[in-house]
Length: 244
Image 1 (cartoon, one colour):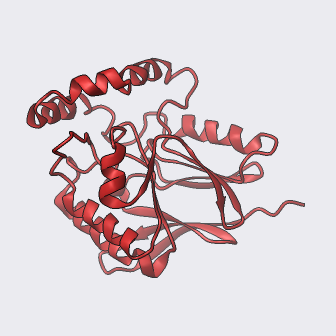
Image 2 (cartoon, helix red, strand yellow):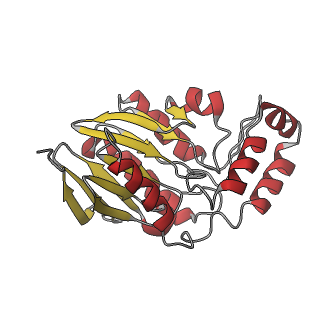
C-alpha cells in the first residue's frame, strides 16, 4: 500500500476493504510495505496510516487473526505494531498450513541470489540494533523526511524484470522435495497467479496500483479486484493441485 505516498482515495478504498474482511474471510495476511516508511520511537509513531492501524485493531478485536509480514519499507515495526494492532508481525517468512495448502509467504526483498546481494548487505546494516538505536535519536520529523527521500526508487511502479526474478525464486521452492504447494510474495508490485510445477505461485501486486487481493480457499486460490461498489471481480482462479 505504501501509506504516506499512496493517494487518499486508495487509503479510503483500503479501509472499506478491511471493513469487509469479516464477511469474506477468516483471517488476513499483509505481505509487507503497508507503509512507505514506519518507525516506532519510544513515545511517538508516524501519523500516516492512523485509520488503517485502527481498522486492523478492530479486526483483531472481532476475532479475525492478522499476520503482517514486514517488508523493506515497514521493517522497523517491532512491538509497537504488535501492541497497537494485535497483529502477528514478523520479519521472517511465514510457513504453515492454510487449510490443505502448505504455504510459504515472504515479502520478497533480498531473495534474488545475485541481483539482491548489495541490498542484503545494506539490509544487515539498516536492521542492526545499533543502527536502529542511532536512528531513534533523530527527531521524528527529520527522520521521516530522510527516509521518504531515500526510498523513492523502491516504491515506484513495478519491478523492472516484471516480477520474473521472484517468480523464479518461488518456482525453485515449489519444485523442491517436500516443498510448499503455495508460494506468495509481495515486493515486485506485479499481480500474478499461476501454476508453477506442482504448485501455485501468487502475488497480489500493490493495492495503491491495482486494488487486488488473493483469496485462499480449501480447493482454490483466486485473484480478485476490489470495486468501489463493494463487489469483488474475479480475475483468475486456480484449483488446488492434488498429489497423485
